[in-house]
Image 1 (cartoon, one colour):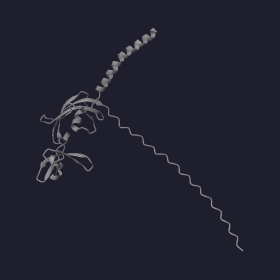
Image 2 (image 1 turned 180 degrees about the vertical axis):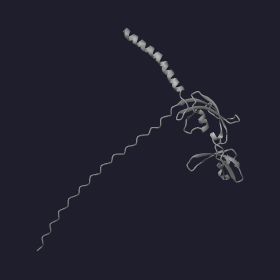
Image 3 (image 1 turned 90 degrees about the horizontal axis):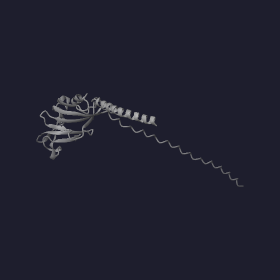
Image 4 (image 1 turned 60 degrees about the vertical axis):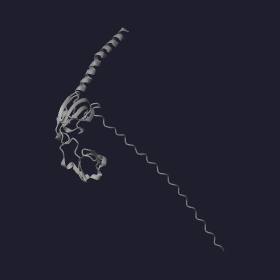
Length: 212
């Protein structure tokens, strides 16, 4: 009995000592995670223009989640985030060529004024059009002429230098790919219906004897 009690006490002492070690190891493993290709990143951010005005922020909302290295983020910011750890913060300035590109003069098109809804007919209004492939394309009214309207199809932030304040909230392995349902097996072929038996030929009637 005493031997059994001693064994239980020793086991409990081992668990008390071992459990914190496991927690510390788990926390250390989490801290060792860095932003790199293929990782799921949770990010708090505030985007400003060079004038200091806030353009967009995640404050008061859930952190932005994206898969690093999959072109889900503008290239300049993705490059700055690479190598950061959980809790890391950064203030970065991204030039237009590393953000949404320079303004493309070919992205301005004139359309007949009657094609534009009357309530949206003002400079700066954002309208949406659909491409032949069904993709939604945002367009901004750049200029209103007598009979036509000049539409700007550049990204609203094209040509602008962007200022980001970012904080890495979490880093997780990529989610597993969706499982593909097993292919439905083809129904077994039904056996062919048996052929109907052919009726035997009827014997020929004997010829009538010649009448005399």
